[in-house]
Length: 163
Image 1 (cartoon, rainbow, N blue to C red):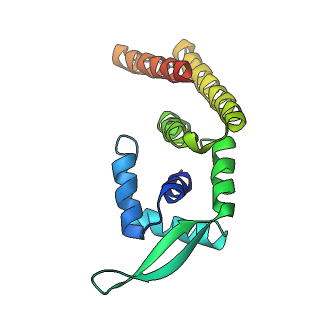
Image 2 (image 1 turned 120 degrees about the vertical axis):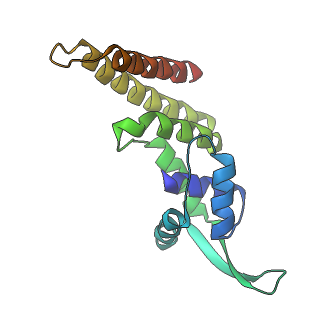
């Protein structure tokens, strides 16, 4: 997910690592909190893949800064990551979908249709998993636990309606 967010930011701005972190915190404030310990390795991976490039620039204060920018390959990779979105952790899926939806504005009309279909499939599968959990007679859930799962089911329906 961090690669999607970094590429999304660099698609809009050329920036230093510090500025990338600030933009992520400001733009994705409701969904994500990053650190340089997360951003640095992801940037290095993206740079090795040819998705971002780095140039040295002297700041107004006379300090040398590394400025990162997205490459054409990075733009394609960002689209690819969104189109092939697959949450690796089912317990973070709703938040990751929100982030992907937030970034999906970069997709073409046809890509957006494909993206939405993929997201709807993920939401449907997650919903089925939760409903089966509620119906499983071997799982003893308290009333609070049941209500919590039902709230999650409502969130899924709201996201589906958004699409």
